[in-house]
Length: 171
Image 1 (cartoon, rainbow, N blue to C red):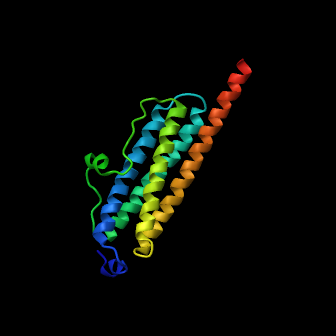
Image 2: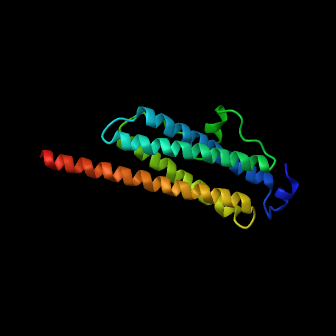
Image 3: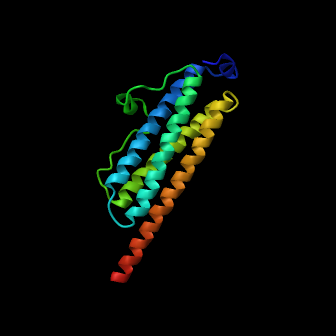
């Protein structure tokens, strides 16, 4: 643990930041797995476009987990070591894609991104002016999560509009 790196914290304890980051770390692993499995089971119209989006988001969530783990280690903490602990310690939890239809999967993914936006927005508020390094990391991740929500919502809307057009042409 780098002592000078921890000495830059102002008005917040490293252990508090580590605890908050560990919860976000669990969220990232669950989000990675959720996107991974959704991309495997998804069915329906415009499935290929959704799969491409889900695979890209899975890669981003894995990158986020690495960023968060690295910061936890810099602060002298240990990332949660066992996958059994992920659901117990997450903010956003995991929702199995039991309905593999495209729109249902996208709804779940959007809900997950909205939770992540709330988590990282809160982390940014907590670390602003207290831990600039963590603040910078969570701000980068927050920007990605906002982009993910927008991408997923746009795809959801496009598919919904396409379905409406098909129904109009059938009737």
